[in-house]
Image 1 (spheres, rainbow, N blue to C red):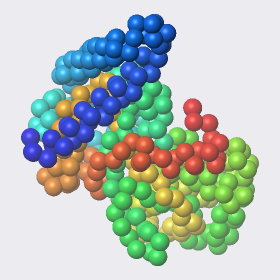
Image 2: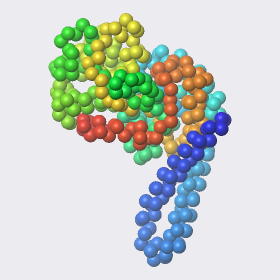
Image 3: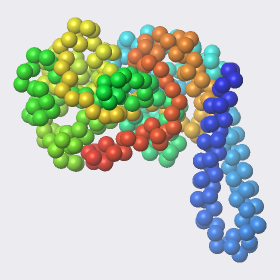
Image 4: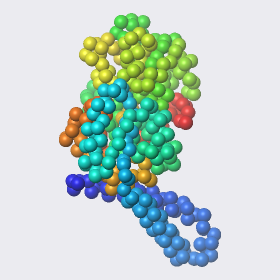
Length: 344
């Protein structure tokens, strides 16, 4: 293991113990009356003894090595194109972290969320909104710890690399009748899915900000028909095939999934954001700080050692970098507040 991985292990150990300490302080409030009678010294002893035992118990559970680390990669395009490299990525991770790794591509976010809740999945690569949902549905035991680093157009057109991107609405060049978001009224649209961040939540939020729909409205009051395609690539294909009038998704999707000839047919109606990039999340109660630190280092090394696997097995990812859960996903709160879309 590289020496730099000690930083990641220390960071996760601190994060776990800080969470335990916060939880223990809350739990100790239930014993406040008898403790006042017994005295402050005994209070300290009880809290210290209880906290120490909780830490030992959790550390003991996490130090029990998983027989197999199961990783879900939520599809962003055609699964058949990435499954060919599945074994190579499994072998890479297994050799780097010293634990058997099983990689699978679930059919959608809902399936992945269910597998995280059941504990059958330990790590998941998913978009930011499902990542926030996973955190909430598991009482904070699922945390985003890495995010996809993508090209991002900053103010003034300067391109930078960051863990955020722009969401867009697209139509075809030949559609002279659609040149703005206002022109999309009573047209058909392809969204990735109701849990998609850049392919649904932020595009709907933009309609609310422009006053085209009201907060809390279903977007079908604006569009004539809505297709939930299942992914950015599927939405673009539906647009190219004339199945819908407009489509929405991440700004990088056009260049990732379409050929140059297909790209030349796409017209960008508007860009908005920034939107948090896709996240890697993990179950903090099932994966030890040591193991998740080793996995994080393996992801960092992947860029240098096997960059082709980022593209062929992780849907065109550029690079994954460490992030803090709250900081990375905070912009979702404003979008959810604007749209009032139920957060399940």
